[in-house]
Length: 546
Ligand SMILES: Cc1cc2nc3c(=O)[nH]c(=O)nc-3n(C[C@H](O)[C@H](O)[C@H](O)COP(=O)(O)OP(=O)(O)OC[C@H]3O[C@@H](n4cnc5c(N)ncnc54)[C@H](O)[C@@H]3O)c2cc1C
Image (cartoon, rainbow, N blue to C red; front, side, top):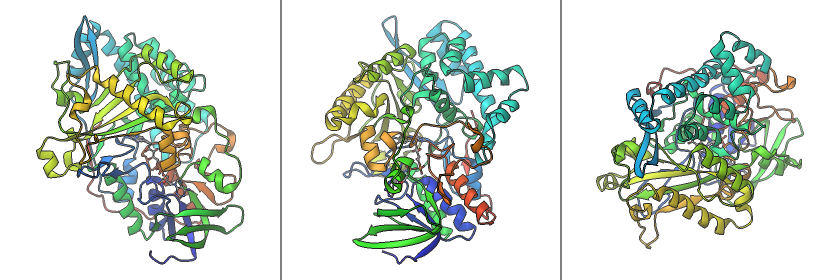
């Protein structure tokens, strides 16, 4: 273990990607920084791992696509990231008049999407309506995205920015004031198209279109405003490449990182913050002027002694399955080549009414009859995560993200419910395939199939995310919701010089680096230092927007 000092300007608790962003900005500004991470790797939910040890395939174990990581942070920190466009946005298989077909939304050819919607609905109306609906989120992105790296503005001020024309006013009303379900039902008529749109409002959280909390609207905005386009791109090299770049940036800025750390005590109250921890069997105490907290408030509560008081909407809802395949499964629908269908987000059992039913069933405490999920194949857009040998043999990786799988379903008997859920999610996919997915899975030396499932309980155990909430807690609005928040960075806590730098800060959530940046700006403001992270423009390739 490298020798560490007894005092730093800043200690960061947790080394997720946001902690690394904060460390990079602060280190560049000349502050000394120490990061303390409980796991044996750096990156938190932003990581690639050799999930199946017999095979050289590095899967993005948790997060897998990037949309919200601002180009400004990439430039500031000199990150060499390649975020690659997927040719297909989404593919949704369906059966019409007994024949297997699919709705394909292309990222590169609008005519393909138009034709596919006409084939499904019988007219061009739904396609035009879908475009109109998405123009609302485009307007919202235009008006709000740049403010994400600035102190929070009041709700009134942001609303005023939308008071320019009817489309903007409609965007504000539909996305910030009324439950998303209303606009969705106003604009769109087809159940499958409605469902396709709704999924963005449900990924990771347990909600429905008319949820009065509007958490579905907040989640939807997170999925649609990233870099003003909302396009989700593939990080070349997997999520591990993002974490590696950030780790290099943090170390290059002088930050020190310790893994396998067992935090024992965190003194939040005194002017000098003290953190005691054990690493390698040795107990140490280190002081700092500032403390940044990368894990969620739920974990912080264990050290502060204050009880964590979550809201009902903070519960996580996710079922993640990672798979290594010997070959790409063949589809029953033959209209599109399998490669074209699998390289976008593949939706299964995600019709609008079907998801209302699965939400209701899960809310009553049981796994839904039909489990909505979306699947995506990384290797069709970027095969660099496979060894040349596996590439040559035609291997692929796919990852399934299940919805309407709240923590509460798994809390009592995680092992048993995880097995049941895995079976149901695979059955959902298998209805669209010529042969079951299981037939395509790679087999490990011990004969087991290369499949790994993670429930919300598993995610909380591995990363600390509250009840498996993939955003640590529920997503927030891009504006202040109380007078006290106006003008703050959204990272402040009740303790002086203790700030949230991870997803549970306001405007945190997703692979965005935003709360890491904002916490660093707060510290630099207080220490009267200027960010010194401007570097020559790096080798960034961001493909064109949608
Ligand atoms: C299954 C899944 C899929 C997702 N898919 C996507 C996606 O495709 N795209 C996207 O943008 N977002 C996605 N997300 C969300 C995104 O990954 C997270 O919001 C984001 O990575 C969180 O980053 P962070 O740095 O804020 O926190 P984290 O990654 O949660 O980092 C917190 C760190 O603190 C550490 N820690 C916890 N407790 C302690 C302790 N007691 N002591 C020391 N360290 C501790 C953790 O180990 C972790 O390293 C997904 C998340 C999950 C779980």
